[in-house]
Length: 560
Ligand code: AMP
Image 1 (spheres, rainbow, N blue to C red):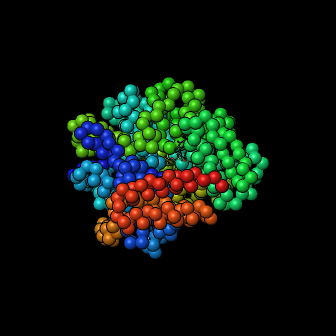
Image 2 (cartoon, protein in one colour; image 1 turned 180 degrees about the horizontal axis):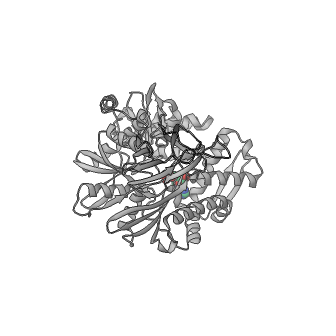
Image 3 (tube, protein in one colour; image 1 turned 90 degrees about the vertical axis):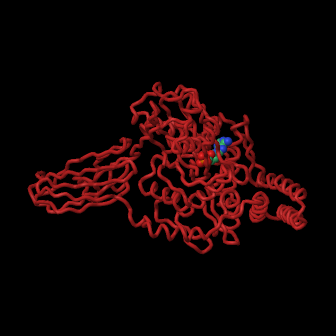
């Protein structure tokens, strides 16, 4: 009975195990370690997970869902094949697939998982992640923050071992920068910062704009499909610059071309670098560290492969970042290591992970110049180490005030309305003169991210207490069991013949996307594969699949 580590990502997910003291990424049925976090319900009512489901996003959009991690812990639901699913139910299918792949890899049953979550995930999102694990039939006792996992993996692979790490995680749509300390077997997140709207997509957009400028067309005037196509070409260009000196972008019927180099890309993305430097400055300031006190800068996330990012960090920080293995795999390697520790594998020593509260928690106070817009009064400041318990002292705003309403807010903005309201406590107080009431508001935030708020009126010695959780989003034990039974009725699509399935789905997707001669070519390729399948000739099937993959690769590279 094994424990596995899982990096449950927005775009891709990975599973990792500790076997004979070695950290190993688990290959899926296609032999790949990255499984796209995409779910589709097929014609048989089976659940497809990963690359096959990703192809179906285009051909069967109403039976397919992606990027559901963004909505974990919210009330959003997805309709798939006429049935409603929550983000955690969809995530549970991804987890179930990874569990099955790991069982196949290990040859034993997997009963427990350690799952990584972004450091900024709040209580609802963490709870939803645990629930997803349980719905996948696994125990999830521990969630590990992604930067802690990255630091753990880095410490084992890099020369530095224990030390202070700056974890720079640039994905498709978000940037997370964290300072993590690892000393004497204690991993401690010291501070986190970032930008929720900055990632690889912004670089694609900048390239697209730069292209339009260079060839004299207006980006805003492009049709939606033209824009999507230009962005796709821009992303390809960006990726080529990881291994090539220059990349040529061609777009539109008039063969407009533009040559992009890393130098030009760096120049064009100045605004994005300004935002990146702001996030780094924030995290260093919050952690009260200078860059000289950081032992290693660790690159995480697909976008940190860009040479312009490496160069920017090297120049801005005066220190070379290190890329440990693939930046897509480092978080998974970290949770896999932690799973190994949990299994009490002799090869890995015990380790303590501490958590922080990544955002400020506070209450509302009266804004005397604009009563409609209360001001945020912070009680637990962001980056406080958990568990944390702090008290704020308040008073009444006017003579004879008999009631107070204490809002509970999360966020960094000055005005409460710009922060997230987590809850409210209403309380009758003893009417006294303005400024004489003594109201104590205590926030206690525990290791599992659960916030308890206690309000005390010292005059009456009366206390009101609430636990701020969104109960409506949670399933009771009974509901969970019932849902588990319902979800178990869905079978994962069989993994035998998955490569054939992937090629067929890809062909269907390209058929839907292309037209004319290309469509004819695709139809012929698909027919040839089906023919070989009817003949049940394995050698012929393998040849036809290889032939189809080459043709589909060419068509996927097609320039509009
Ligand atoms: P993630 O969310 O970590 O999977 O990151 C996905 C992002 O990484 C997307 O914006 C990709 O365009 C980007 N990416 C992946 N590979 C590369 C590469 N070789 N060079 C530049 N960006 C890449």
